[in-house]
Length: 479
Ligand SMILES: [Zn+2]
Image (cartoon, rainbow, N blue to C red; front, side):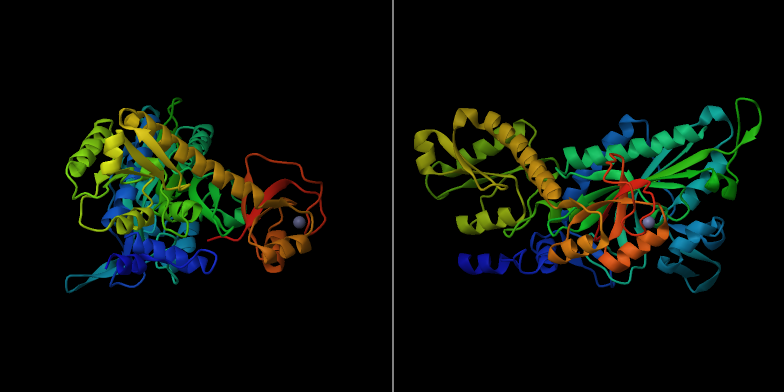
């Protein structure tokens, strides 16, 4: 019986079929379910618990820099959406519309928000009067709808959960500073909470957000070598302010337009975690966001005293504020080990009659599989130390992998050859011409991911056209 159940849990190996491996984890780690409405996903309790941990940590970071949460309507009148031409043009193919209210045809179509710049701008126009009220630093946690043609859990679905920050500032410099600050908040979050290294940088004009003057991004490398855009931050100048009539009386008593930003990160981050740390046994979660950080398993739990000893360990670990679960169900040990490996629980603590005799327990790491025999009095210290080590090991492994799969090239042919061998990141110089970006995609199959803040001088010319280079760009195959 136990064996059968274990087999049911088995997943496709990563090397055999990466896409299937990914889907298997999403379903078998019980993160999501497909919904009866096509292209939508259901976040199951375990998946949602990961999202809640992401929200809690990230929200705390936003608040440290003075941001406040608000809630905007889910529907946007068509006339409001259309006031800023570039934005609406960029999103038009993906907008879902409400045309009926009950049995009545609506006089004006209402869009399900694909993003809320328009709604925030309209609101700012109502509430902003004086420079004294600036900056307004708002954020909302919500879901948005974008009618995608092909969908995959977490990576691309017609509805996804996210946070969208929207701020307005007195000066352009202040708004630009905010844009970069928020990008670094994301980059640090990825490092500290997700153990995921990212490349922060600026998007080329071709890849930037519709309506933005500048878009900044953090790009991460997944285990298959592909790039995942993990969060973005946009600077709008005063474009939206002008389109929506957002004005304030300045320090010199003249009417002025504020400068605006927006920045967002989504449930896509969970997809990023799966593809950054997961393995053939399932999910591997960084401790900071793991719904269960430590699972306690009583071994031979029918023997006298074993369950009590296990509950005692659970209680002690809960007392130091860890998320702990003692699995006292009647499943076999083998089933339990496989189950919590699948769910990516960072540490497993086992205790059985033999351990009790020796006054010890066994701790097993999910990331390396290493086992430690730990004297019971050292439980708390060892668990805390190991959780830090798990995080650091996940981060360092991902970083080493990204570095080992990033290459500098000076010819398009070399890039094509490298990508054909194995999907990777490529660094080259670039002249700044969009035509060369398009040519790179056509000839080598890669798109520009970003112009990293940390620029390197790899040469003097653009490998596509041979003209003088302006920037170093990181290219890749993107999700
Ligand atoms: Zn060029």
